[in-house]
Structure formats: structure tokens, C-alpha cells
Length: 271
Length: 161
Ligand SMILES: Cc1cc2nc3c(=O)[nH]c(=O)nc-3n(C[C@H](O)[C@H](O)[C@H](O)COP(=O)(O)OP(=O)(O)OC[C@H]3O[C@@H](n4cnc5c(N)ncnc54)[C@H](O)[C@@H]3O)c2cc1C
Ligand code: FES
Ligand code: FES
Image (cartoon, rainbow over all chains, first blue to last red; front, top):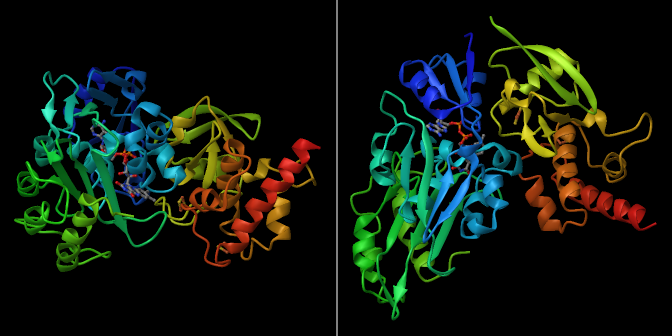
């Protein structure tokens, strides 16, 4: 199918063009959009690009950090301010995928993709949309991300973890070093006086989009991160989840292994 | 179908070419420029045999929208050697039997070149990470890893000489 490529200097103009057409897609790094084009997709016939360098900026703002939607995994790895996200970026694809793949595109990547988004969820991510005014909570955004009309995400703002121990990420895959997720887990576990305070825990590949596990978060509140402290959180590990079955793992398998990996993450034994 | 003119550097030479909108860089290189070094394996980003360098960084040319390389510099395996003189990576691939059918080799060489350009003395683990996006059905990877490490020590020998 013939495709037309429209390139805009500014995000606002591009957002208007995108919302005016049902057959247009925004083009981030293109790793998934080009795949679809190479396969002869009928889902869209117009590709919308933005060249504005603002989309590729990273801005620290007190204890929060704003990451442009066009920042690539390789750019994350090259940025010292984002050191806590390096293990997350490094877990995505191989080097050539990482030079292209953006964090904006990761928000829309279908399951089992979306590992970076799992980390952003655990870090209290808020999404800014072109022409959209106030930022939206990432968990609310993910519930409506596939709806029309399509929008352009300009950046995601996250909490900077208080210390290196507070943020943890673990991706389970069958192939190393490059493999797709059986599941991934990210947790932000700030502690005061040895007790967890304001835990946020998110999973990838355990549902149609990356998701927060609020039952686990509640069960961790005020507890210590030892075998008995985390027991209630493990009991809630897969509550109300309906993990997918795909070529990598069955729903049953994901449900069985999620508490095992959650335990390792919480006890800092994930390897 | 609309055709868009684009210009880029290809192995150090200027190229000006018309591309079909939405086409990928791999098609443009093979059909437009006539550089058959980068190979088509999957068109999905999973095999890595189409790997080229864009401004020195590894890209999967099958997933690169041609329009995005306007004004940038592309390197492929065709540009590695100088005439009959092979690049040390190519020589090391030969000496270590790192190519069997050879289909993955152009992508492996570019992934390896990108590694050595950034990190001239990589560890074995760093080599493994660098070629993690490149699939080889023949060699079992060991000869490729050995070749990259070998090229690294030959090149550092040349630098210190
Ligand atoms: C070989 C291979 C391995 C991979 N491995 C992984 C992996 O391990 N983990 C993982 O999570 N992913 C993986 N991916 C999937 C993908 O590369 C990543 O999810 C990547 O982050 C997607 O970003 P992109 O910029 O390439 O997206 P694009 O292809 O540009 O876009 C993807 C979707 O998001 C939309 N979009 C992109 N940016 C925006 C924006 N700013 N606003 C609104 N909509 C937007 C597009 O319209 C499109 O629908 C892999 C892909 C390949 C090819
Ligand atoms: S052809 Fe590009 S990765 Fe396979
Ligand atoms: S040598 Fe045949 S695929 Fe690598």
C-alpha cells in the first residue's frame, strides 16, 4: 500500500494532523511502525514525524525528572542523570534496537513489549500530551492509550529514586543477553527507619499493558523487606491478574513464577 | 507513488537519490544505491543482518525509514576495506573462520565495528552484548567472538606501534 510520510517541525501541528486522520500513525524511533510497514499493514497509510529537538531532552526538576518522548534507549544509556534507568534500557533489544527505540514508542508497544514503561510506572510516571494541558497519570493513560483520536506524547515525568537501593528492576527472559519478557517487574521502595513507605510496584507482560499491582503495594506499606515482612505482598502477587498466553509462556506459567521473581526482587536476590 | 529526493553520505561518498515514501533504508541501499552488502533476513528487526552505521551508531536498515537518513552518513561493509586491503575485522573474521555461509557477516561486521569504534579493547562479555542483536545460524558464535577480540588486539597493536 502506498504510504505518505509527513514531517513537521513542531509538535502542535503534527498533533493536529494526527487527530484529523484515522489512518495516520505517529513515528517515534520506528522499530514497530516500520515493522508494520514492511509487513504491508493496512492499519495506516500516513506516517507523521516531528523533528523538534525538544522531544529529545531530559530535564531534572527537583526530585522529578522529565524525559522527552523522543529520547532513545541509547540516549538513556549515555545520560548520567538517568543511571538508575540504565539496567532497564539495556534490557531492551540489542544495541541497534536501542539506538532507534524511543521511550514514547515503548508506552504504546504491545505486550510482551513495554519493559521501559514498567519502570516509568513504578517511578510514578506522568504523561504530557501535545496540546493536552495537565499531565496524566501513566496508569490512567495506559488504560486509554489505544483509543482514537490518537495523541502525541511529548514527555514523561518521573520521580528520581531517593537512593540506588530504592529502585529495582528485573526482567525475566529465556534468551540472554537479548530476549523478550516472560515478565518484567519494577519497584520503587523508599524506606524510612527500615520500613517501606509509599511503595510502587509494576509488572510487564502480565496483562494487555504494563500495570501497577496496587494489592502488592498496599501489602508492603510499613513492612520491612525481609522474608516475613514481604509475605503478605507475595500472597497478593497475582491477585486479580489475567496474564496472557503467548509463544514464550502460558498464563499459568506467568502466574506461577511471578511471586518467585517478586520475592527475589524484594529481597534483592534477583540476578 | 510519491517519490522524495534525499541526500546522504554513503561510505564517504555523496549520494542523491529518489526514494519511494515509506521505504526502508535497506531497500534504498540495495535497489537504489546498488550496495548489496547489507542483507535482508527478516524485515522485522530480529536477525541483524541488515545492520549499518548511521553517523557511527548501529541501526537496523530494514527498520530505518529512508527519509530519516537525509544529511547523515551511512557506513556499510562495502566501505570497510580499502581496495584489496581488508579491514582488520574482515581479516580476523577470515583467520578465525567466523564466516560460514556468510549471510550474517555484513551485519556482524558493522555491529563489531561500532563496538570497536567506541570501545577499542572490549571484554568478551562486551563483545557478546554488542552482537546480541545479530543472529548466526552457522558458527555457534564462538569464532565470531574470537574474531572480534582478535581484531581488537591487532588494532591496538597497530595503534601502539
Ligand atoms: C528486535 C526487537 C527487539 C525488541 N525488544 C524489546 C524489548 O526487549 N522490550 C521492549 O519493551 N520492546 C522491545 N521491542 C519493541 C520496541 O522496539 C520498543 O518497545 C520501542 O521502545 C518502541 O519505540 P519506537 O520509538 O521504536 O516506536 P515506534 O515504532 O516509533 O512507535 C510504536 C507505536 O507507538 C506510537 N508512538 C511512538 N511514539 C509516540 C509518541 N511520542 N506519542 C504517541 N504515540 C507514539 C506509534 O504511533 C506506534 O503506534 C523490540 C523490537 C524489536 C524490533
Ligand atoms: S533484515 Fe533487518 S533485522 Fe532482519
Ligand atoms: S555464517 Fe551463516 S548465518 Fe552466520
